[in-house]
Length: 393
Image (cartoon, rainbow, N blue to C red):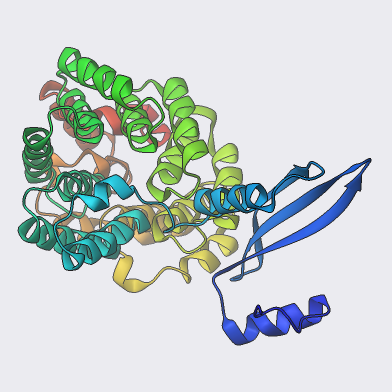
């Protein structure tokens, strides 16, 4: 007996979905192929009815049904956010309560929005306290701090210190943990300790050559170092292993903007929105900015309305303010200057340079640029590649 027993048509299935309100559904169609058959599988997100994935699976005569079931299960794990987790990591947690807190924290981390990262920080900190001898929460917490720093919602210097502390703690529990080694590789290379970072990444890759985590950290590292072509290739490898990883998708979008230009970035942004990142406010704010740079102001304003006000902080606020400048020119400058005055650590935040350039002029922006360059500011490496700052190079 199945819930689709009485479904005789597509109309019946659509009515059933309206009753159950699932987030995703999978459909299949059998197509004859000589003596065999091909099953064409489609995975669709109900919201907006977006096709996430389409794949054909060949059925050989007398092949056990379990083989097809396993292939479909793997497709679901690969294509649907929130279904992927490392059972080995979870088994190390010492109670069902800590396991549930960890899974909730990881879910929030993977959503990759300002609000979700703040929730992840609370949950993963709680999990570390509940299960202090488990590696997974320390690694997730280290990534959370790095993500919050990147997003401009946590003091960057303190975030780096915290991330390193938690990654080191994970290696103390298991000095061969590939995720912890990858995190330390990223942290060390961000701090310009390239030899140490390279060795750590090499060891992490040897221990876990097919890891979405390691691919993401290494791609992030290459992006920060300005090796855009290599970064794009590595991030693509990560997304091939885990297409639902929001942070990797966002990183790919930034790399595309820097490396191949705004038109490619807009196309990629539309593609990501049609797949797994439809409501992600970081992605939406980037698309708003890109569209505004291209002069497509009405479409940009329409997208802005889709961003929740509770998410407009840090990098999202910066993106939207820059878009407002593109749309309204000098009329937007008082709002931008007010925002910059409210930022407590403007002298330690290269991510504000695009706004400083339009609000205060080339001379002041160039002074900040040289300061970041002379101090070897670890986040400056990422922002100096921004096409909007070409005047300062």
